[in-house]
Length: 143
Image (cartoon, rainbow, N blue to C red; front, side):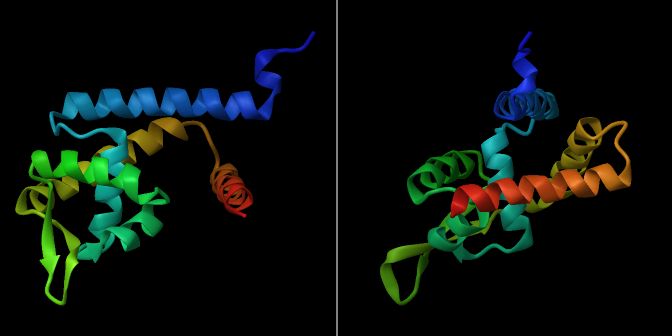
């Protein structure tokens, strides 16, 4: 008999649903007032901020319109700011606020806890292979 989790597509989708739900719960408990989507944006900006929305869009693999909504909400909660680009009135840069910098360690620790829970019971070799497969999936769907 065909089982629902025999399908790799369904297995991946259901795993992501559980991951998203767990991440949301952890973020809600943290009191940071950020969503899983906003977490991705902040993580990228922790690596490099003071960048254009186009550059950030490439870094987080989201289109500009989706990213704009995430930035709007991060701006309302004082995690990021938009600043004008001196030589281009139509453009702006996204920068982290002091609040984001203060909470950086907490956010990164929370991400480590989530990843640890997600990969609990997995060997280093399995984790390496899993990361490789996920990257391959992204490449395959981006071509």
